[in-house]
Amino acid sequence: MVEQMLTMQEAKDLLRVSYRTLHRLVSNNTIQSVKVGRVIRIPQSALRKFAQDDTSGGKVNDYQQ
Figure 1 (cartoon, rainbow, N blue to C red):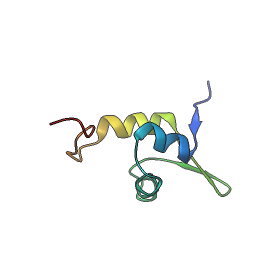
Figure 2: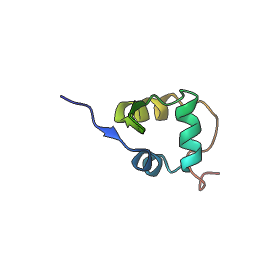
Figure 3: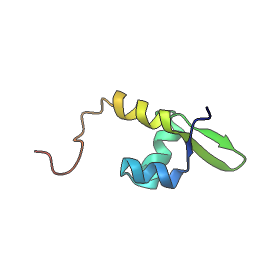
Figure 4: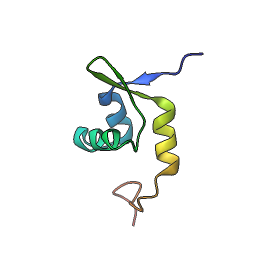
C-alpha cells in the first residue's frame, strides 16, 4: 500500500498553521518531507507523528484556557 503524500497547502490546512510556519517546520526537519523536483510533499504519517510528538507546550487551539 502506498502512503498518501500531502501538498504543503493540504498539510497547513490540516495543522491549521500558516504556510511560513509549516515551511519552517519542514526546513528544520521537525516534520519529515520529500522533495520531488521543486515540489515538497509531506507523508501523512509524518503529520501524525508530529502531532503526537509535539512537546512545544503550546495550546491545542485558541479556545482552551
